[in-house]
Length: 305
Figure 1 (spheres, rainbow, N blue to C red):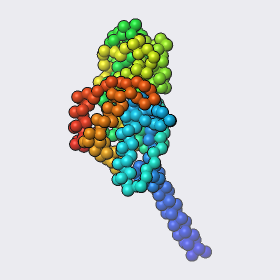
Figure 2: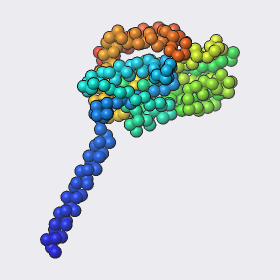
Figure 3: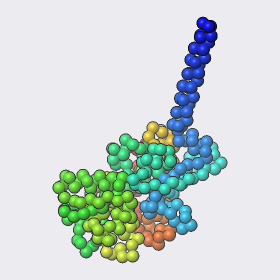
Figure 4: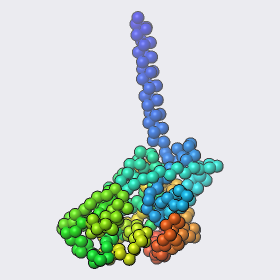
């Protein structure tokens, strides 16, 4: 019996070790780096949204836009890097409210819309690529109301979008300047803008480039005005990715630097900001600023941000 007990104990120890090893392997598979998963599946999952000219569904149901063009070129660079004959793109729709969750639960490999990288809180949750656009936060209102500064909004209502940096900025200036603003939270940019159109709120705070696009998309753009005062002018768009996935981050940033170092970035920019937008028939007429041009020149040779 003694020999049997020893053999049983030995068997149980071996069984425990094997089970622990299998558990470790399973966990390792769960945190498999993005590049390796892309290599194995031949698919990259790109997050898109409804935010022209950066990311939207165009004619024929195609996902298109400035951000999408850049991410498609990044995908091609990754295909070459991984030695794949073909790399499929799976587009996953996301909103401002759920984008971080979708990135971190592996539903999206890279989010290619309009996410600002200026928040330390956001940087603790996700990683960002080298920037690809510079923005400021302003507000839109009806021209007839003669609103141009933050002080003009004192005691009024303003719509904000859940999960955006703009929302936290408005809440901050509201406290600091004691504006007594009434904030109305929505889950989409369109709903927040519509509240201004329907005179349910006095203003809507968002990235200035997106406000410009939304105004141009209305049948009566002359009825709207963007604030003279900038609420925040130090924001940049970057592609969101999961934290602690350095190989993927470096590969994405290397692809962006290559695009910036060529004349291709200027052609991509011109297509989306100085020409009619496919499916929308609006032209933003926004030539490349000298500030953004200098950013591209610097970023083309700089290390990743």
